[in-house]
Structures are given as C-alpha cells and as structure tokens.
Length: 136
Image (cartoon, rainbow, N blue to C red; front, side, top):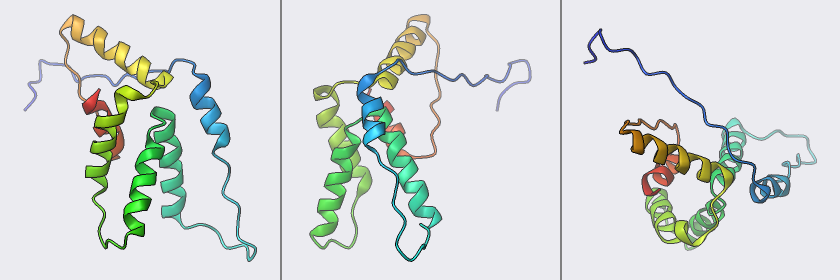
C-alpha cells in the first residue's frame, strides 16, 4: 500500500530523437488496400497493423520477429510461442542493429535516472515493448 504522505508519481512522456531510418521505414509501411468488393478490415487486423508500425518505429528488428513467426506458422505448427521468438530475436539481434531515435532517447533517459538513483515503472499494453525494455 502507498502511504498517504507520499505523492502519486506523475507519468512523463519522452519525445524521440529525430531519426531518418525510422521515418523511412514508416514511409515504406504502405496503407492496406481495400478489397475489390469493398469489405473492410476487421478491428483486430487494424489494431495488429497499427501495433506493427509502432513496434517497427521503436526497433526495426521487429521485422525479424514477424518473419520468424510467419516461418513457424508455415511449418504447420498449431501453436507458435510468440514470446519465446520475441525474446530470442531481441537477445541476439539488439546489439547487432542500429538503435532507433526512440531507443537512444529512452536509453539516455534511463541512464540519467539511474545516475540520480531513481526508480522506474515501465507500463505497456503489449509484450514487445516490455521485452525490448527489459533487454535494454
């Protein structure tokens, strides 16, 4: 329980550093064309696509994760352990790829907080950002 004498922490938003690489990736992420019969995408498909674009903006290595998940599905497996694939790709590829502006900004923010001796709670509604922040 939090004592009443302590104040509730205020959330802080961090603006990313400018980065040409991620802005180019965002431009390559084209809009989904509609079918000829004018049927719309389902809400789950729209959300999944928006999540993918956000994750690629954070770390372009998300393309590797998507590729490995699709490869696992093509082998005929009924269940694919997405979390294990995410962890494996992030562990092996994170230090081999160039950091995006968002990651560089986040890392400098975390280093400044650690130097001050402050603690941080990272909240995300999807697993990929949490896995990424854990391994950073």
